[in-house]
Length: 226
Image (cartoon, rainbow, N blue to C red; front, side, top):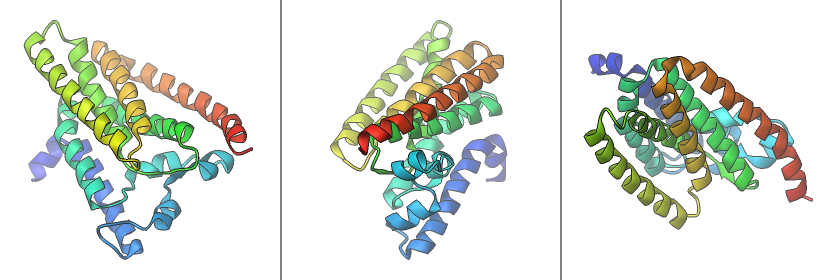
């Protein structure tokens, strides 16, 4: 077990943090299977009026580690377990971390833009970003690994389609965060696969986009709430 952790420290570390946060939220909620919504908001869930109108932008980060129930966290952590290890093999640690965080943060901003009055939680945006990063890697090297690339992209399309259909059929699942994270991860995976040094340019560009969206959202919210 320790050898596995040493091989994939980021993936297992992120999973461990999510589990610890979940157990703490379960303790405060008094329920291991379903979290109390007010507890999640108090712990840092996304909620448009608090984030955008009151400037609590830190919630973009904390919401990435909160989950609404047992099914929610099991699905997300199992997905990260399957996908994250591959990304950790193909990319440097700083690239993995950059793509994961910016996918989650920009996915959160997409959610705030599309759903101003909804409570948002979960690592789905970041995990979709990890999936996108893996797709970007195969796209960048599709000529060198044609057979594996075609097989992966076929599976990728199937899984993506199923997730979108699943997300659209359940109102509580925020597809906008999924799509936002996926796009960020896909761009990062493709660009960084071409040249690992471009991780800093990618990070700077994503940070710039975040600032632009954060500048835009208050004006958007004034229109929504007036």
